[in-house]
Length: 273
Image 1 (tube, rainbow, N blue to C red):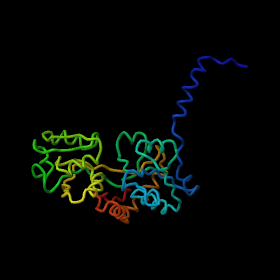
Image 2: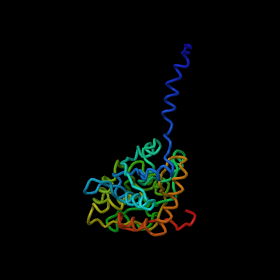
Image 3: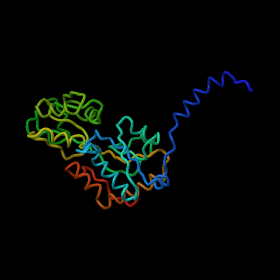
Image 4: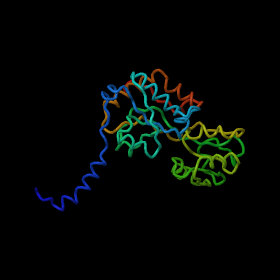
């Protein structure tokens, strides 16, 4: 028997760990079609993108989109519950074929997963009230005032915008959205800056408050469907399906069904999808 080099033994755990860290092979389009099953990761804690219905099944905007994609591909849909921290690891490990759930296109994510063409947008806006504010707020520039009291969730996209554009405002950072909405509803704050999709549903929990969303969109973010890095055959097929969903107005109709309002920034009709 050939003697084992001690240096080789020491290297084995490192090599095994490195191989274990490699992503599992993606299921290309032909495998998805041959098994007649598409596994979609959806986060049920992001209503109305994903939510549990009265039968304790995952429902919502993302579920409706995933079901229609599967229907048009003539295959079955399997919805897999994911959370925000594990949705990309699930995709990388091959436990799901696609991931939805407001997965905004960012450079950092594009380095580890592939995106389809945009499914929908997210639009950063100003939420305030039509009455009861320290000063009238009719345009984003009105926020840059020492009398304006702003409230914001720590670490959200609105924080750097406020720092750059409303530096004179009084800003209180809180840990969650319910606390921010209570502060606004109770008159302890005048405005906040966030994506419209994060505020339109919580607004409904505070009846009688004269909410007002300013018309001007401060920034728009594109949201696609995530697929495993390099799975071009599945991504390309999804792009064609998404084009049809946009062309038939299915995406916009489904958006209004769940959000109750039109998409703030529409996806342009693009024959190159």
